[in-house]
Length: 108
Image 1 (spheres, rainbow, N blue to C red):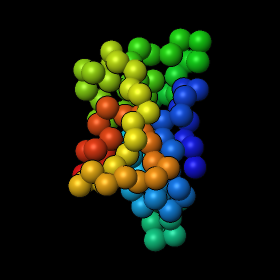
Image 2: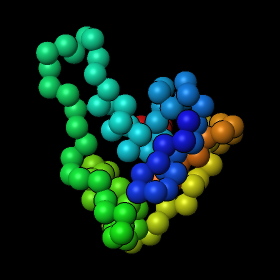
Image 3: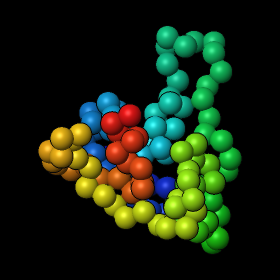
Image 4: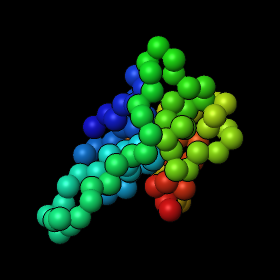
């Protein structure tokens, strides 16, 4: 699966991996917004804010105005698509994330 935000790929992963351990806050927000039978009648989660105007993308990470994890670097530097690895450094084939803090996101 390739997840896009603001016209860019923000995460790539095999389907089961993306559901099990998302490596980008936008992907986490998307997954949290899926209705669940065990939460019937409860308010659905929604990502705060509005999607970016594609003619005026924010500086840095396009998701930074809506991201609950955003820090100063997110507002100035566009993150590259990082190869995601296990905590011990082992490769996770097909996994990448365009988040400055993907390690904290995936490894908690």
